[in-house]
Image (cartoon, rainbow, N blue to C red; front, side):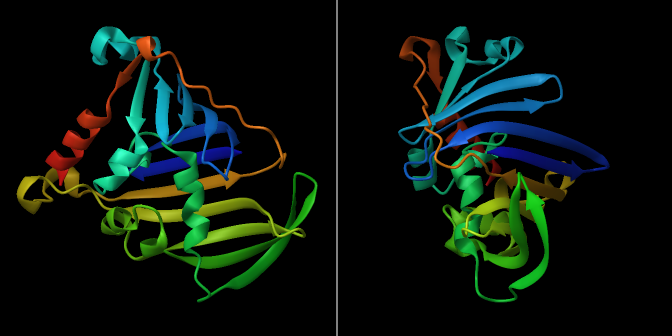
Length: 223
């Protein structure tokens, strides 16, 4: 799979690229994520997100360790989302397709993707049906539009989601200043080479710093 996430706010935009492989059965994945000249190696294994940060960023990590980890299950249990950090968990991003409703489904065209004939559909995603839907709903609303390109075997070859994401409220519910700004986000995911074996090995524990609690504390301060 490949991912491209473009975020535009306050007259500026940032595009993050990711490519790798995902096992939809157990959610394990490995990806390389790039933003500008920054490159991050990322893995998800046993519902834990691991990221190998660029050398210049490890000074902010306890013990100056090259890898950080985030327990996605623990974050989700407290209403958070792993995708708050870069691309985060690609399985969570791909899960937008699970919230498709039968309302306003419209075929808008056909095209060829990676040699496969596909039909393009414009659909509505019910955010409340997604993993961590309650948290996401506060940011993007109850529904978002999505385009899907489906091949003759019923497999999704491409999906594109467009969202307007609200800024995080400050303490006491304040949304003043930069926190109140909205961001336009376009997420494009493409799939291919179905049936590929996916291996996502955990990095050595001695080289990994658990950042789960720090992330949860940060989310609590912003809520």
